[in-house]
Amino acid sequence: MPKPGKRYRALLEKIDRHRAYGVEEAARTVLALRSARFDETVEVHVKLGIDPRKTDQTVRSTVTLPYGTGRQVRVLAIAKGDKIREAEEAGADVAGGEELIQRILDGWLEFDAVVATPDVMGAVGSKLGRILGPRGLLPNPRAGTVGFNIGEIVREIKAGRIEFRNDKTGVVHAPIGKASFAPEQIAENLRAFLKAVEGAKPESAKGTYIRSVFLSTTMSPSLKVNPYA
Image (cartoon, rainbow, N blue to C red; front, side, top):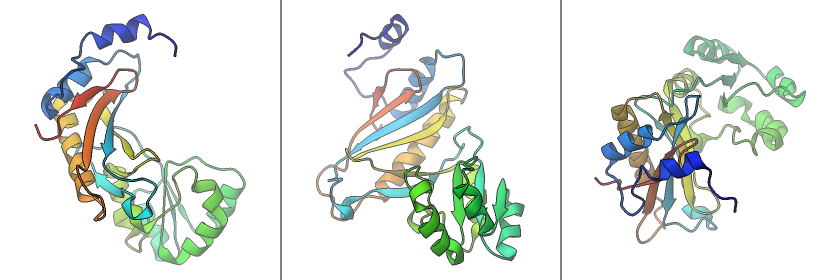
């Protein structure tokens, strides 16, 4: 592995890697580590006590962060009839019918989230699964991106709702704000996220569920968090 640079080593000296910070202190500390010229993303990484090889232990859900992520999310809505207008009025950046499927097949991918009504999901899944699936953009009822209440779904995503799921190592990663946020905003977003992760615990998961929590900015080292302090 390459040796960490001078900037990174200087940031390491600002944290105690041998203890877990309480949520509020962790929020203050991680924001003090910002060093890039851009507005870094604050990221949380949660190691779960699950077996990611077992489908009944998959952790996947959504949470609306109290202060959002600080990112403007471009929402694409695919629906029929009056539901297209409902999505537009709720703030969807692009809303339309199945003609949008062909547009995506032609290479258009200028969106960050895709929502759909159930009556178009047959076509969306069969034609766009290979394109949207690997990108984590395929609408899914479990992720709260499929429903006839499409206006409500669009508004929630615009307001800061994010989807999370475990990776193949049993870790959940998520953005919970920007380095320009106040410490109190990061702390509240973190608590909301951890509560949602707790609520998504599979019934078959045994033992300690949340094994560890780490917080970092895009360019900083991570610090350990005590989620109960």
